[in-house]
Length: 77
Image (cartoon, rainbow, N blue to C red; front, top):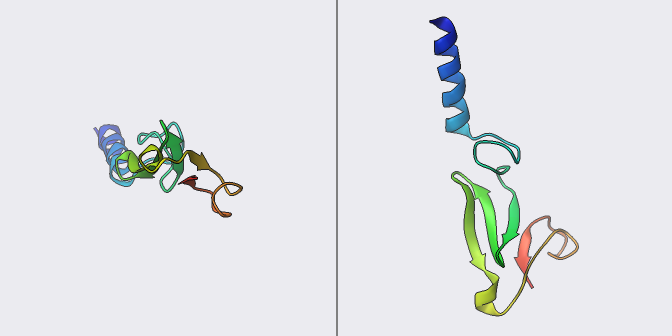
């Protein structure tokens, strides 16, 4: 019974606070940015969340410090 309670608490903690790592429960690392289908997404509370559609402003989604003014994020250029 104790083992079940500890396991339930561990699972609850992971769900409540997220799970870091690309293979985590959220599928991303909190605070990360990426390009996906020419859209910028960030890793938030619910996994990858939409930020901006680069195609709607006739630009291309790029990522990394060399492309985004020294910041390790995704941006439209």
